[in-house]
Length: 354
Image (cartoon, rainbow, N blue to C red; front, side):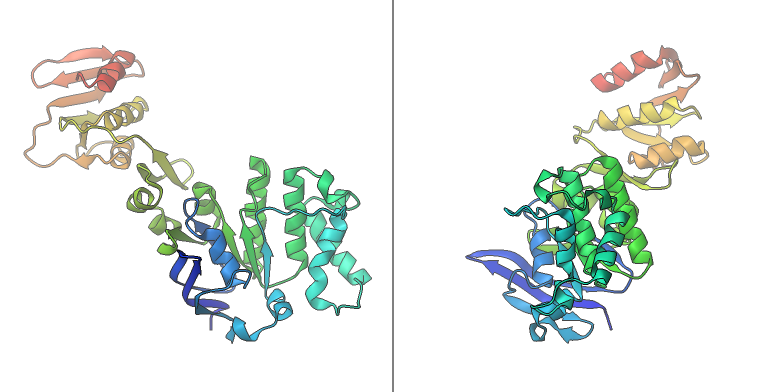
């Protein structure tokens, strides 16, 4: 039995369909990144799963129980939700904000006990804001406020966390810190859904990605199966190369303006770092890149990343580029052998005059 399961989930506001027939299941320990362009329905999807927005149709089950049969407090013991922006007109301290997460476990007349404060302080220290506990929430920076709200979500002590763009106001080091923290929590058994616009960070840290477009799921699975060139073009209108960085082994993207293809075949040869620069310029200028099957690993890898192909048997390239050292490249049209400085060669490639 899945920890969370949603089927045929649809949401209509007015005459607009926000979500259409969405379905998902999540298991203990999964770190699920929800990605997609603005207006795709990412935040609505999370809010509908936890009952903050009423669904038009469909069902949501938590540990086998239909959420329609659960009270708000019962759901709040299962799912903690961190919204995009937190606003209050009252001068609550950071500690008071975090302690408010204990409401599902208290009766209306009860106040927080010492064990609740200990728990709040534990998670405030975990997110690096314990020293701010007596500060009014309005006086905190955007990044500090985000970490206070994350501490609040953790203090709710639920098996499932919904985080709606928790890194939006954070500097890069804190963004990575939040993702590392979430990854650690998932390894400890929590299940986390996170809405994120940083595709590479989501790919790096999340165990699974779900891509939303126009209110429905386009892809669901491992990062390399979701962040495909076709999906990026369909969903984000982005021309991008998707590859594993040979230095880090991480999934990476290279976005580009689509060139007007000039079907002139160029055979690239050599084992010099300059060949990577040359291949990139060839691709962006629309040349048809090829390489020999026995070519160096560096050249064949770079060529494949930039949609190059192994030279078909019996084919005659119109141009051969063979790197020498870092400054000189041999440019070999059919019968005319020339030695061309690298900078000059790149200009010729960019102008399409090879």
